[in-house]
Amino acid sequence: MFKGLSLDQAPPFEAPLLFLLTAPLWGIVGGAALLFAQSQPQQIGVLHLFTIGFMAQVMIGALQQMLPVVVGVRFPKPTLLSKLIFIPLALGIALFFIAFFGQSFSLLFIAASLLLLALWGFGAVTLWRLFHAPKATPTVWAMRLSLFSLLIAAGLGGHMAVGFAQGSLGSSFDILLLIHALFAAFGWVGLLIVGVSYQVVPMFYVTPEPSEGFRKWLVWGTFALLLATALGLFLSQKIALALFVTLLFGYLLYGAWMLKLLQKRKRKIWEVSLYYWYVGLMSLFFLPLLWFFDPERFGTLFLFGFAISIIIGMLYKIIPFLSWFHISSRGFFDMPTMKEMIDEKMALVQFGLHLTALGALLLWPKIAALFLVLSFALLLWLLIRPVRIYLEYKKKPSPFGI
Amino acid sequence: MIKDFMTQDHRECDNLYAPVEEAISQGDFEKALELFVPFKEAMLRHFAMEEEVLFPKMEEFLGGGEGPIHVMKMEHAQIRSILDQMGEAIEAKNQQKALGFGETFMIMTQQHNMKEEQILYTMAEQLPLEKEKILQQMKEIQ
Image 1 (cartoon, one colour):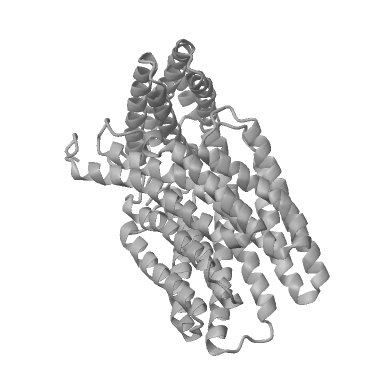
Image 2 (cartoon, rainbow over the protein chains, first blue to last red; image 1 turned 90 degrees about the vertical axis):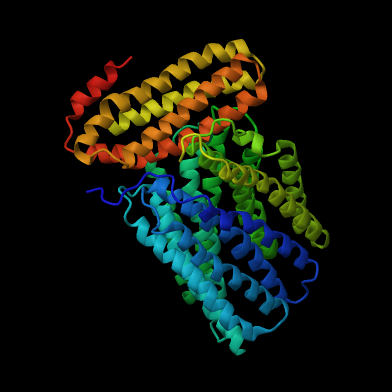
């Protein structure tokens, strides 16, 4: 009945770390490239350094770690699989960026193939594992629908990239672009954050338990609206718009509800990841209004205000915890605690830089590049320390002889 | 049944932990220690319920060895060790250390609890165990 079930803290640290630790590098490159991005294709290149480079890499790394915890199944050969996904993904991101930034669109044939190989490969393996969950909780469903959205978004993205490479975008390009963005942002990214937050927020901050009915309803409602909006685009712009705005209010409701839970949390301590949750959730409040007045800033707020904020906040927990855990599992007692691994004051400085970058992106994009580079560089520097501690302990013989 | 009871017990331990942390962050070590003692007792009692009653019953069906139950026990050992170190830090009135162990305890315990709640207790519910009897025996543990 439970064959193949493992509660081991799989995979080895190196497997998710490959994605988690290299992700901020794309943010640094993205920030720097923003300074020189003039044309629309160049902006597409820069945008994807943040979305696939930073965000998707962290999300893939985190999912590898979450899967054994939430579902009780681990990937087959986690380290090998991790490398098999990482190499085409990283190469794909680099080529995709070069193709758009240097206007050498023929490179997109290879870039799109590599990205599809990585994203579809990861999506399919993870979905297959997720359907082995002993119990389909709202979190499991959110993850499944999120990965399903990833398959759609990546497939459409690949199709459009090939269109660019061939120099013919086709008549339905505009609609496909909207559907691609819709599933990438509100399906893949949004639903994964929703699903993970269901688990992480009540448990890590000791908040009241949200009702299962509402959690489930929100996940399915979001996905249904996503599908309906995509179909609506083929029928009538007005219907699609009405459905999309309803979807935005769904996210607003989610944000308000999570903030209410956080307000009632029993752990009163303030720390940097909590600040990031607050900024991320509060960003959702302004999305419906911005959508009508300023669609470009709407996208910026979703990415840098909501998604990237929450992702950075989670990184501050994931990396020091895993470092501590893997050292502790070998029987050591004398390593620094999670809190000591991250310089808290500098993490607050990094948070300030991120907020400044967000403000600059919204108000004065020209100076945003500088703050983005600084923010991601400091993030990387802060995250390297727990990894160095882990590597130092890895060299020492275990007190248990493990 | 077992799942609900044990999940509820996890939450009660969390509720006991939160004020300990608050007292430490306010620098009130006497209060922190006063709150830490019943909190640690509740944690150890929860582990005892699992290790002395629930896990052996489950192992009759699942077998021992390197399986999920073995992993859960290893994590209990890790959590016990953090609790000991946290207690020492509170006694030594070392705020940074105590908060550091507190945070590490919290994340370690929550990811452990998630595995138990998502998977292990679900397994317990599906196995042909004498659930009433097990519940009763667990409640008797002091």
